[in-house]
Length: 121
Image (tube, rainbow, N blue to C red; front, side, top):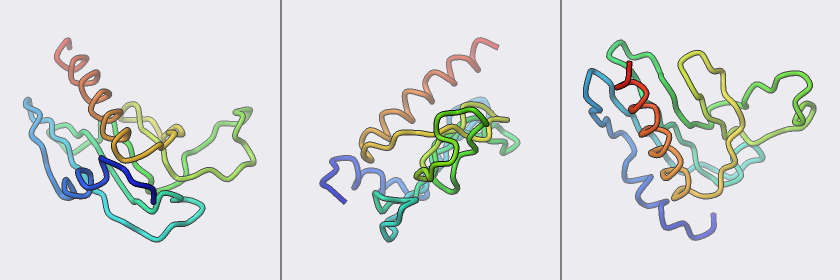
């Protein structure tokens, strides 16, 4: 894996649960794995926001390949497992993983957006 300024930070956050108020919480899991076609960066991760009942509200992970709808330009191609869930019922859309630093930036930007939306309800 190439040098990544956020990799140490991400790996250090493994196992952290971050209280977000109103019963919502963030769970961060990340660890090094062997490089594969599905995980070309040698990193397994799951960064998720949950409500007080444990329902995932949004997240970024690479636990499985994203489901690609028919007619989408990636149909028939093998994709890395990197994807994001935009809301509780989203089965996942591809996420272009650049490095761990950008993953953290993207996750926390999306977290801020979702938290703002939740506060408006």
